[in-house]
Length: 231
Image (cartoon, rainbow, N blue to C red; front, side, top):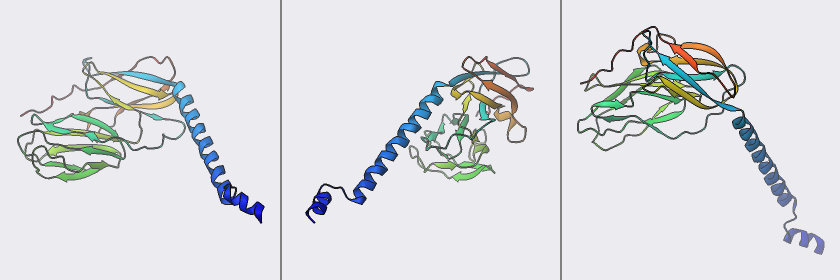
């Protein structure tokens, strides 16, 4: 009786032993996950891609994205909200890529009111006029596809959101250069999309094998981009 009492006082009960074992298993699982992540990062590479138009001029606002040909995509994790503002009577940025499950905010920094609307099947939504400096609730982009965002009050205002299942994407700069960082080595379907292609024309694509010292990949489009509309 006294021995059982001592075991109980010291926390050596079946329930306590179970809790200790569970904590050990959780720690081991965490160590394993960290080891796998470190190993994956060690075998990752940066992929540089260039995009030019049919005349050979560099193209900005091209979204380059890579989808693994073998194995599943990484598990989706909660990402920070993305911001597409209304400023200077334009949407900024003009082109945005997000992963499915990302929330996007649409604050208005203009003195004028705006009425934000999308008719796209990938995400139809509406944000009616609201006071300057107020940020309405974010919009959840939960389906892959191309979303065109308009202002119903100012017909030149337009933004494009490309919603992707893959987390491996980047946008080209003014020199037509894109860099996808920390891309795990392996085979990928690499795709290139520009807003002038909309949701009808399929993106350019090629198969690439990503290695530690990967050569630059090149895409050439068969059109010259249409200039963005202004006021």
